[in-house]
Image 1 (cartoon, rainbow over the protein chains, first blue to last red):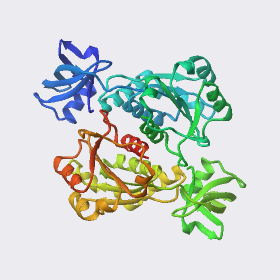
Image 2: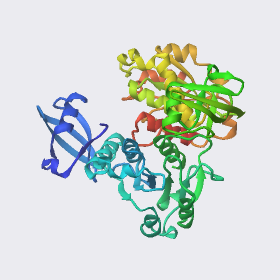
Image 3: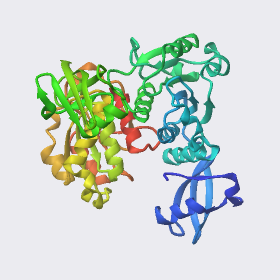
Image 4: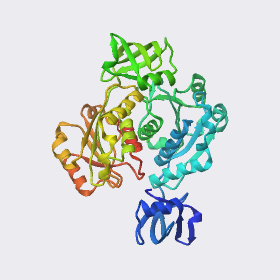
Length: 240
Length: 240
């Protein structure tokens, strides 16, 4: 944990926080904190700052906190991710959160294995845990918005805002003629961009047609086929 | 497997290859191949091409292969990676191989846990397996050169070629004043660049001084602290 993520209900008095459970154990065992030690903290959805360990008891840590500065800015990016197998989805969500993506849409596609939608990894608490892990990793407090879209066409046609109100849209596709752009300029960063990443085996032609209708440009990433977590980080490193 | 990686000893006749063990099982069970089906293949260290399934028996697949084209170009990049914990090292090696990095040096550093150097994950066969996985993933056949440097200063002072014979050198360091460059130009791609990534907790001052003496510029990646696999892919996506 590069940052101890606090929830509003951890506050037991003004500037005073009580940690229990996994976070208390982590502070005690991994940080090997002792009274007087200062830790990076951040309030979920709020400011970041410092917490000084005041008291430690088995299973409990009391911190005096000063929340003083904004978390890092979010990337103005929505990622549409064809639902990968559950373990990969979880790792991808941690990575996307740590990279600061504003919104993640777990999207159905023809080549998504339908059993993935039944995974307990899609339950709210498991999703929240992956998000908290990504936030703690990146010293962030602002969770990305995470949506699940089980109907591909309905999402693209009805739920995704119209293209003219938003920024650039790209769909990753190995056979595309255009290489993925790099290093977006400030003007392009003023609006929410969207990047769609396909399932293993890629998008089908009808899906690519739907993307085109919704204002997406198909882009390729070169001849190398990358794992979804690697591809996401490489693309985001390239774009921002 | 996006590419079935062949070794010279798999050839049982000109253009004829016999797969056994894990690859035969994968072709049978995951690709669900049948006689007549064409698979992407590549000869380790050699050309890529197509293999047509001729015969299948339990535990054995016979392919007729035509090796016709070069694998994707390597990135002219050497990555110096402070040895992470073994599981992370293995994942990072798969990711770096799939991204096409030319050379990976697993480097000691003050904050590397010394027990990591005793891990069986550093044995040649485990390293080779991770490399083969990265190559199959990315449809590549050219393994990166992987070195282990257990003496930090000796590596930087004696083993690393002089800076004037090579390309740019960067060491990732969160407190650096310079942001990591992006989108290298062709002229910079003509020589081997080097990127050093620190251990959890970062480099110590003496290590940063050694890097400076060896021609490295310290660069930061912004306020977000990323997992090593995520950071590597984001940096490489940004640079190339």
